[in-house]
View 1 (cartoon, rainbow, N blue to C red):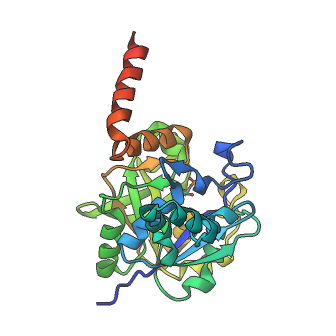
View 2 (view 1 turned 135 degrees about the vertical axis):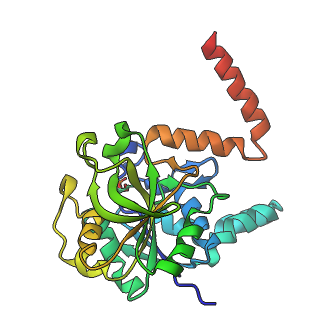
View 3 (view 1 turned 90 degrees about the vertical axis):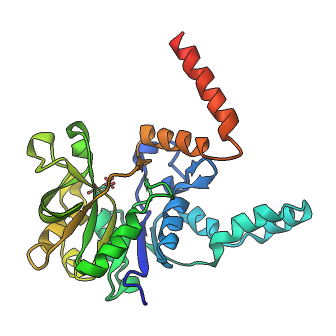
Length: 292
Ligand code: G1P
């Protein structure tokens, strides 16, 4: 049966200020978690859900993203000469997908980035994946959301309960539980202070949206931080249709933050068969050293 969600938008035009100076001339999305750039984890997650049409919203200094998902004849020739067939297969694995690139121009916010994808998405429902929220490959968050969309036919936002001390970093919802893990959203606020937050349920970087969001984004004014916010546009959408939240209880790494990035690196290194044994021993040694 044909799947409803075939397309995904990856906003990747942000300035990456939290990682300066590393991101001065190279994209945050290309920072590696062990041996893969951050954005590749998100793309593999989309492919695992049979979402095969990808658009990446890029900007200045982001050309290496395009090069990463392209063939590199020079590299291939060299690897061939040294008989590294497995590595060739690994680097070419993702070249076969259909990725479109749209430049954002001015980085005016997440809502603006999503609006730029309108000609690609047209009139279909679609997924949005924020690649600095890394979900381990064994988790089924996006799959569950795609499945839920089949029933609900309404926008769905991934939610996570976060400590109130961190709530100011997220879009936050007010909602009523409909059934297990599924909430009807009544309101949402972008990055509220803990005192004004309507709940402890934060929006995390996986969305399923419907194309009516584009009409709202087209006329959206800047909100929090002077940026055109996706959260504000979804709040407006509530006037015309139901929006749902799906509460995620699995593991997520906020790799857009230095501490989260380090946690992701350590955990992914521990699960890497080539590294895990030596790395575990090293971590134990470091812990002992710091305890002493
Ligand atoms: C964006 C959204 C925010 C959401 C967050 C999830 O914020 O604007 O609503 O909670 O992603 O990661 P950003 O992290 O880009 O500032």
